[in-house]
View 1 (tube, rainbow, N blue to C red):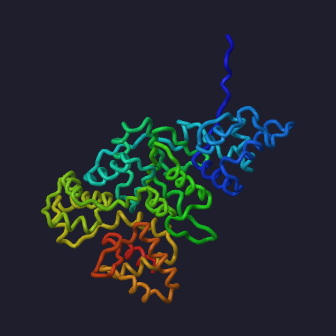
View 2 (cartoon, rainbow, N blue to C red):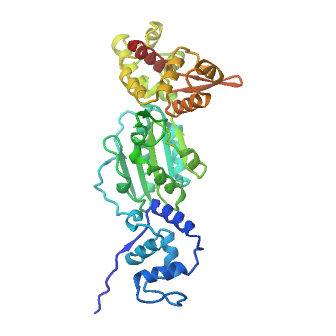
View 3 (tube, one colour):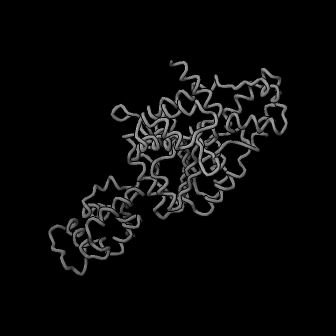
Length: 412
């Protein structure tokens, strides 16, 4: 009996597909041009003249070339030859075998307390069922991005062959160690904002801009959207990463997570607070429906006001002390112009129109820079907007406003 030796095969990663596509277009040859096959054959068997050959080197054929371009696995030696024809390093394009012990991979976190979010989960579940390849859940710290992603991943597990969760909170994985999209895989990257921001040349970056060592990640997200596969990637981020708006036109879903409303009733009931309809609405508005803020406030009300929300509201108290370290951290991560903008907005509880902001801050920077800073703050979920007739007003949530006032006052 003659044994058949299985030759190793290689395939392009998602990013590799995009690099190969660009390199092929730069060559200017059509896909069916025989020069691809002639030059690959010359690499494998340099002693022969392959120009105008009718049969090419072993493993080299037009169907194999097309399988390579589609990201299918082909013989390793042929894979390397095609990469060399494109003047590319094959190791940079390779889909690596998924390493289940990859640093940063953890189990889906257990969320013991979860309130509301039925509409959000139904909307995102429908997006997954419709074949959406990339979902970005964005929003302010404490708003519940991780909790929603965890519940979504748990409820969607049965639709995928495997579900992998990566927390970026400690050490984000390098681009080379990101797992490949095996068939029907659900990948969750929690805390994507950890690879955004930072300083360059001593200047803090605008919202969504990638840190220098992670500038290749936008290409990874682009390949997820533009490559045909049956997997789904979910990411959570305090900031909207740059480039996502373009990808949303190709089917990616950007889902800004707002505060709790009806779910806040369940949260307050869990803390055994007493309240009426108007009182819970007032409390939710004070804390922007932020579950983290509401939980802290609920503990305060339970301990000092015997759980009576009405008495707490009547006292005029706004719990900020426990939030200030968190807000102070956010302020350290934004540019000086954004800090100036936030400081000014903190003087106007009712918010300001775009025209009012430009008029008041015109001496600090150009209109273009001011608008860019305003957009950056909005994408960081630090500034909110509301319609006022035919104009839009920019404002800070009451608890953020109070924290900002106290923090800047302490610096004077």
